Image (cartoon, helix red, strand yellow):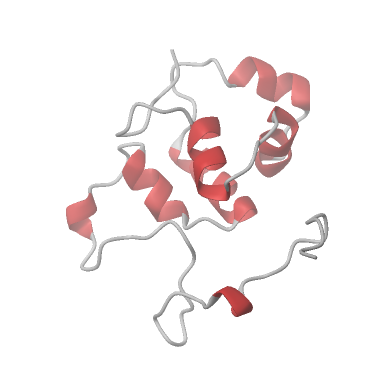
Length: 112
């Protein structure tokens, strides 16, 4: 059985919740830099996802990797002075970006 988050969810379910869309295995495999077949075998391992894999997945999907690592039990939330949030914080201003400042994905459908 794979490693679960504090909410007893797998990484795929967490990503789908945060991104508010379906996440296919190929996207996670791409984030990890692995072929789809390798990821398909790896996703059922008892130690999946590892600390490093959460770092790669978080960076790829624009989710703060430390937040994922806290959720999956690799880091303790008490290690942070401020409660970590799932989205990247702008290092210059130490604030969450406004919606208008968020990057637009090239594969995103048009809004109108």
